[in-house]
Amino acid sequence: MASSTPTVEADHPPVNKHPYHLVDPSPWPLTSSFAAGLMLFGIILFAQKGIHWVFGVGLLGVLVSMYFWFRDVVREARTPGVHTSVVRLGMRYGMLLFIASEVMFFVAFFWAYFHFALYPEHVSGAAKAIWPPAGIHTFDPFHLPLLNTLILLLSGCTVTWAHHALIEGDRKGMLQGLGLTVILGLFFTFFQAVEYAEAPFAFHGGGIYPSVFFLATGFHGFHVIVGTIFLAVCWFRAKAGHFTPQRHFGFEAAAWYWHFVDVVWLFLFVCVYVLGAGELVQH
Image 1 (cartoon, rainbow, N blue to C red):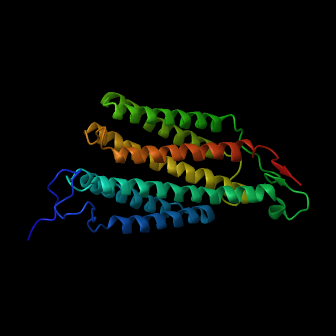
Image 2: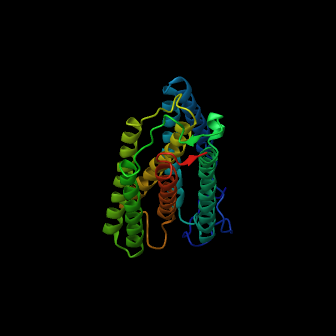
């Protein structure tokens, strides 16, 4: 029986005589789905009951699945004849569609926020109502939120620097830019954790404003963590020499994702922090 492992260069069709790659069976999509579902259930338990260990188990499952899935994809990418030009084009379309789905994910949060901001009487039931609701003290947008905005904008510059350095064959510049981007992502997560610790309102039992605020900014923070992990993996791959100026889709996809995270934060900063400071709407 002939081996199914491609033996020719990646830009040429593999031995199966077509330019497409049929992936091997993998358990990681299934385990990732179950772990992510458990993590979401853990968030609900934490918000409603204060139980946090379920979220921890789900998070651990997601991280383990990510590690093994990354390992398999990296091996696949480095197998000659697998990621042909046609396959790489399909992966680009897939990444763009994934980011488009993430955009709609955040549209739902913005829709909820502006629904209650523009019609706050739905919250209080009173004819004259304000948003944020009475008794809610919002964050100062020009304190930690502004600092985090500057951090993310700077990280967008450093990841672009890394990408251009890779294209120009500057391996040292690429590693420096990627490393700085990962560090800035960690700083963002740290300052957001400080902000949550000092929040003047609580997620649990705090009402509609804290729910919308923590869901929108918290899921964005989760995306920052995921993007930081993506870029950290790219840093180790770059150090190992996996990327070339012609073939580096893994890094390109991570950079696209990071820019998406940047743009979403700008909307959150303007709409939730700046416009939401004080009485945004009064009827």
